[in-house]
Image (cartoon, rainbow, N blue to C red; front, top):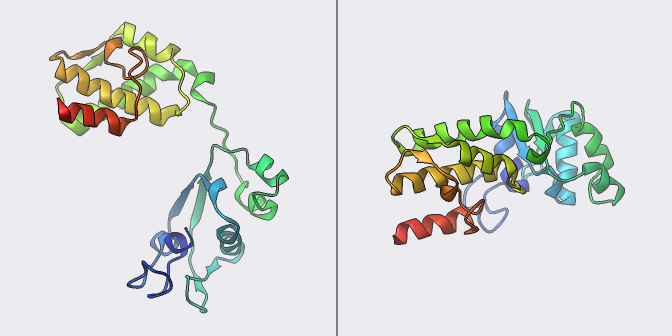
Length: 201
């Protein structure tokens, strides 16, 4: 993680066969998005804190500080305040990150948004796979709005993506509940597993 974020000198670790610039340098003058920031280890947390305090950091294997001007946006599903209480996340880093907080409610708390999110996901799937115009039936929308979404929007997008391909395989342009992987049929499985099934067919 440190190498990925802050870069590494050639030979500083087994995979550093050349100098690695790191994402902070790549984002200099722009924005760096840190997903699941709660999973950073203690050393990476300390280095991130230093960077947030004064804009300086050290690449792995280097003793010369570098500077970068980067806006940080961090996200996590974990309760960072609870992690701080448990001693698993630095309190000083938490307050450096929590300058402007946006709480994103789970899909189960905003079911009225599911139809719009599903329609957007379907448009993206149609465009990505060059599919014919495809729509969601009222029954499919109802199934989506009443389903559980532990994987949140990512799971919804994957479900719609696979449903669009299933509809294509069925030679229809309307997604019905039976096309919704794991939500109605109980087939379950990860997106990768489902796609392997399509490849076998």
